[in-house]
Length: 316
Image: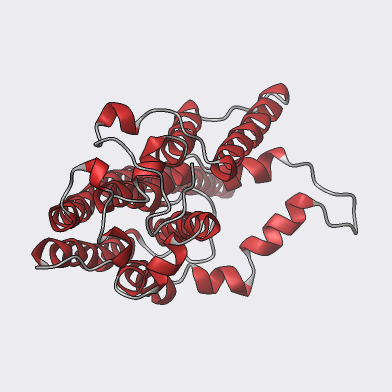
């Protein structure tokens, strides 16, 4: 079956959730998902063999994150997404706003840094190259809010409301590139806000919340724009196959509703993750202060004892 747009896709029966979840793997994403799971498993096993622990919660989060990518790219959802705006929007929202959050909570970069062996002195191995990349100027730019927020917004408006979308949907390669782009944009947007991995731009918790809420209203407005439109706005979805039995405009309204409603889900997830991280950070800070206070207290006690001892010797 051809995944290309503009009427090249074979006629599909009317969409139901059961049909949408049938297996229909995209080779590129299937390979990427299996590779992602395999490398993560290798890292966890390597740490365990060394006697180090790795939080189970992180592993679960990462695996679910990869499975969500598989869900939208390796099932019939991907086939229906080529001809139905509403199904395409479900794919877009999951791969750009849910998958990145789950993958980031899995801390894959931290796992790689702990699992990869350091190179011999004077050499650069995978671990050293990864560290160089993390601290590079390029990373500083692409994780800066002045870059991530406009990119996050432009990925909606500049893509859907220009011919770029139709061009990408016209070929299988273009469609894969667009989905990879959605995932990457989600990762660079959410990483500085709630990623567990070390990153070059890591503002305070309040600033992170502001960054989160700076992008979300534009997402909601995009959904409203699609819902309020009086005619189909995207060429690719203007003439759905008659076998689907759908109206292009009502399908576009449904797509807008999905985009509008979905912008709330990641906001809540990220806020919960942020509050937990903030609380954990405060607890660690308090413990450090307590330890410092204990040391200071011990020093004061020693000084007082020394003072008493000096008085004693003077008296003698």
